[in-house]
Length: 114
Length: 110
Image (cartoon, one colour):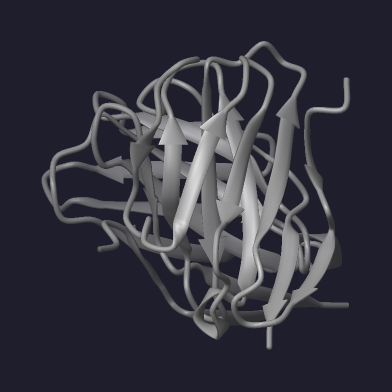
């Protein structure tokens, strides 16, 4: 099992460009999440999908959109990148709600917006 | 807003010593989880403790939970250089999400 995979690993964008971060899990998990991590900060939740067909905003959703393509895949889109979106992005999944289950994380995507 | 806050922010010890880090949170929880993050990598789940549990062990890890004080501690016994990492506590802020603290950076020197 690959677990949670993310592509790309690194990306440099110019302000105003768009891109999609891809995430896939092979553990048949119901719930998936996108976080960003900035230096000296913990993880902040951008969007999550509690189950296939649903998505909800997290703590910092502005400037992002998501798509739960199917049970395996959850993508994060930056429509018009801004320097404030320079960060490391992590995708995670869990069997069900976090109150009862651990989250499994991908290796991260390091994004720089110039 | 962040629910859990770890203390200390950074901890430096020698191999073989014990490392203790603490987490405080603000609102009632169903469970509290601890994660480890090695530099440049994704987070790895260490242990989950439920609100009706007071202590839990996993190998060299011991986690305690005091719901009356809204705090938890993670003890790593007989630390090794490989334990060097950042450690995060996470609480279930709602039905479907976890809220992570800012983490404790642990450095274990040989």
